[in-house]
Amino acid sequence: MKNHTLYKPKQRAIPLNSRLWQKIRQSVIARDSGLCQICVKRGLTVSGTDVDHINNDGDDNTLDNLMLLCHECHSLKTAQDMGKQVNWGCDVHGRPLDPNHHWNKEKHTAWYDLPEWKDNKYAQVSKRLAELRKNHEKVLDEAPPTQSHLSGRS
Image 1 (cartoon, helix red, strand yellow):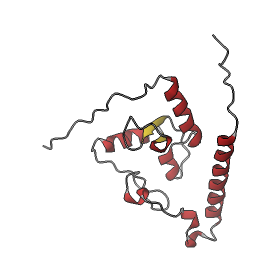
Image 2 (tube, helix red, strand yellow; image 1 turned 135 degrees about the vertical axis):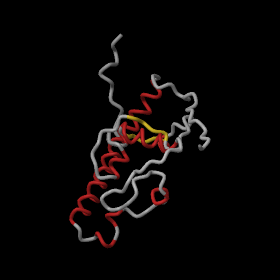
Image 3 (tube, helix red, strand yellow; image 1 turned 180 degrees about the horizontal axis):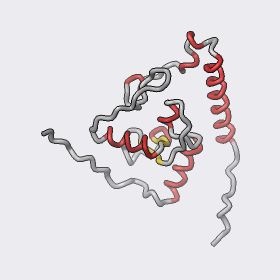
């Protein structure tokens, strides 16, 4: 029998019920368009519910270390982080879904920019959608903050 070290998450640097965490959470949701980022890699459109620390450091609450996941993907990632064997599978293009796979660690050319996809209509639509999403995020980043409908209430 193997001796496994128990996975014990440490005390959170920012409590989940704090205003600061809610602001960070809303930023992640907006950046990730409300979608589970692992499911997006699979070509699926699934609402994200959980904000995950990519490097498992609960003290690192920078946006670069956070991503939105659905509950199922968050559970799988947590299980993997605890040392359990998890089979993520591959997307429709054969790329690994495991966020820790070395192919997903390096900067790779977007699949729709590869020469073999140059004349593929689906690839060009995907490329255009990626460009539109990037432009949309830029517009949102530059937009003035809106006032909450809850402000002014006691």
